[in-house]
Amino acid sequence: MRIMKNKNDMPIKAVTSGPKHHFFGFHDLCPWDSAGKRVLAMETDFIDRPPQAGDMAGICVIDTADGNKLKEVSKTGAWNFHQGSRLRWLPTGEDEIIYNDRDGARFISVILNVRTGEKKVLPMPIYTVSPEGDFGLGLNFSRLRKYGGYGYAGGSEKGLNEPFPKGDGIFRVDLKTGEAKIVVSTYDVAWFNNSPHEDEYHILTHIAFNPDGTRICFVDKYRLPDGGFLQRFITANPDGTDLYCLPGHISHFDWRNNEEILGYGKFSPGILALRKAGIFQNPILKPFLNLARKMRGGFKQKIAGQSYLLFRDKTQNVKRIAAGTLTEDGHPQFSPDRRWVITDTYPDEHHERTLILYDWENGKRFDLGKFKSLPEGFGSAWDVSEMRSDLHPRWSRDGRKICFDSVHEGARQMYEADISDIVNG
Image (cartoon, rainbow, N blue to C red; front, side, top):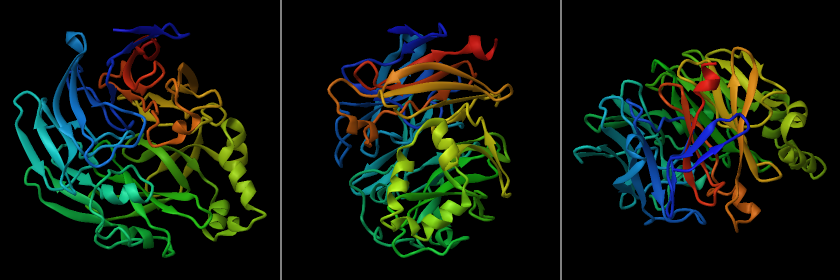
C-alpha cells in the first residue's frame, strides 16, 4: 500500500496497483458498499486508446479490510473511461451490484450478487437507480457515443440519424421484472421551450435523482451552429411528467437537497440566445468565441459568466456560489450531511488537476492536493481525449473519506483520502 501526504498532512492511499489499470468512473456514484468495507472498481489492460467493441473490462470488488485485496467478479463489454459501466451497489441488498454489459450489438444491464455469483439480466442498460432500488433509468448509449456523450462502442446504429427521435430518450427499467418503457422522449425534450433545428441532434444524459427520489434532473445536449454544444438543464418527475427547463448552460451538478441543485455552468441568456441564432458563425466574431473557450479561472468567470450556480427546481431562480473561490469547472458531490462539497479541476497549463474541498457553511476552500494528469510518455492531446483520467472525487457513505481516480504515478489507479480531521475539526 502506497501512502502519500499533501501539504495538509492528509494521508492519501493507493487502493489499487498495477500492472493493470483501475478506475471507478463518474462523480455521481459511491464505490463503497453499505458497510464501507468493499469498494467497486473497473480493470483494464490499456489507457492509450478508446475502448472498441470486443474490448472487455473487469468488474472488481476490493476488500479494504483485507489489505485492499482485489477480486474480479465479472467482465463487461459495455464501458468507457469516464463513466465505466455505470457500476454501483444496489440499495436493496448488501451484496448486489448492477452494471451495463452487451449481448451482441444490444446493450443490457446485469444485477450480480458478488457473494453467490447469481445473475439477473435486464433488457436495457441503466444510467441511474432510484433511491429505493426498485427501478432504474436508462439511455441509448449508442446515441451518446455518436453525438458527444459518454457512450459505448459497437452498439446498434438503428435510428441514430434522427436529430430528435420520438422513440428514444430516457427509459424506465423495472429491476424486478425487467419491463422497460420510455418515460421521456428526446423529441418532446427537443421541442420543450425550444424551436430545434434539424441539425441539432439532441442527446439526453447525466440523469440524477434528488435524495428522496421524487424528481430527476438531466442534461439535454445538442450542437449549436457555431460548432459548440448547449447543455440545457431539465427536471421532471421520474415518470417523465412535469418537465421544467432551468435557466442557463450546465456541465456537472449534484442535488443539494430535494429542491436545490448545485452545478457549474453559464447563466448569460443574451449570449446563449446569440449562439443559438448562429451569430458566432460570423468570421469576425468567431475568434472571440474561440478565445472564450480557452479562458480559465477567475478571469473566465468575469468575462464569460461561468461559475458554480445554485438552482431551485421549477423556478428561474439562480444564485452564484463561491465566485472567486471556486473558479474552475469540476465534478461536485455533496457530503452525506450536505455540509461539504468535494470537487476537482481540469488540467491546468502544467497538466495538473486540483482536488478541492469546499465548506458550504463558511465558504472556505481547502486544496487537498495537485495531481499530474499525464502519464509518462503521453502527449498533451491525451488531456482532452476520451481516455483522460479526471479525478471524479466521490464521498464515502460515512462522510469521512473520498475516493478518486488518477494517473499521477504513471498508471490509472484509484486512491483514497481520509479527510475526517478536516470535516470533523
